[in-house]
Image 1 (cartoon, rainbow, N blue to C red):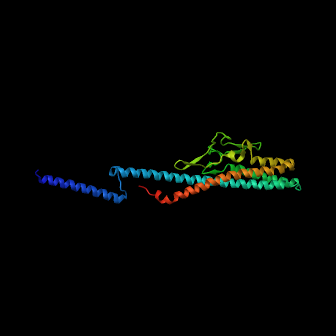
Image 2: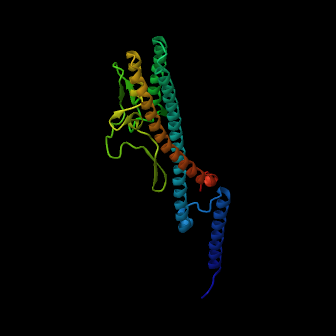
Image 3: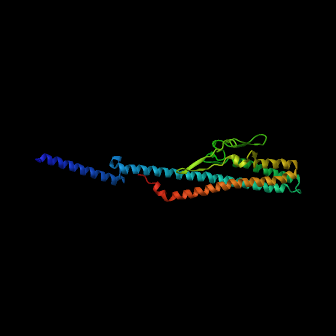
Length: 262
């Protein structure tokens, strides 16, 4: 085969263009810090990078979900602690009111404080996190509790025992791992079909007005039941908080990695 000058020049130009193309690719990689600019640069590595990016995005979302769930439960835990303190104070006042040596004026002063505590119970029942009512089930955009003209507590959240699973708000904190963040209102203020806590305050007011010391004394036990119910709910919340804190700590070692982008 005869090799002409034109063939040699053409081959030289092809080789030069190939070298320039490879040089441009290396310069692009150095400039932007990315090995792959377009998938055709290396389809196998590109697919792995896309898969890795998807995994990182999922972990970032799980981390955010964990932090949001933890904040929600911490708000709930604080509300329950405040509610328990109110009930404990009401119990102390009930013990005082049951003392037969108090005159009617002293008992009315106790009733006035009980009325203020009862209003605070409703305020705690309408606690919010990030603009959402935490005890309202799925209906988080409206206050779950109000008091009618008769002084009865009305629950505007999800219906009591409305479904076998209730209205649980859950966050996914890892693949296939979900945790409930809310406490439904009836878990606090109802024991089955029986109203609790708020009713104890109302009954105490009525007993003081009627001067029925036996009924006042019997309400000490009712407030004890209210405290037990709150402690049960708080223990459950505490377990969830501890679990979320452990989950959050597992994500922390990779936090710097999450901020990097391919």
